[in-house]
Image (tube, rainbow, N blue to C red):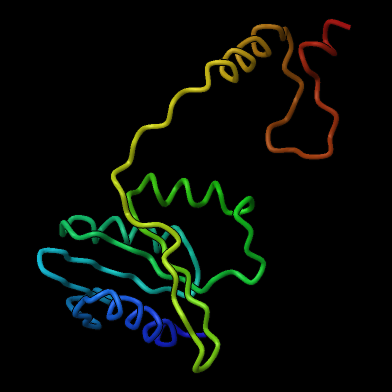
Length: 157
């Protein structure tokens, strides 16, 4: 799949919404305008940090910015919840494109919106700090999985 294949469904989506759509305008993959609305859409084959950085760069223009990627084959909201949180925190919108020959289509997963800071989870914070304060030795190695770790509880036992 190429970025070129993502363009027609994205173009059709915004044309149906009444936008004038242009391709490849000053390094922007897709632009859409309607009245005072100005949208930039960046097309990529995969969701990556580079794509997010490119989206942030486009925000400097004052446009609403979407990133458009192929819809993952094994998509589940639970699996992508953290990724969506990062994209929303960057104030970008997300479009999934399903490429199926002449039946290709694009769907807006969420619109770009102003980021509202998350509330702190004081209970979780307290649990972590209690665990830290309950330990007297540090024999664990960070980043390991399926390995026995020493907790404050096991240390006390």
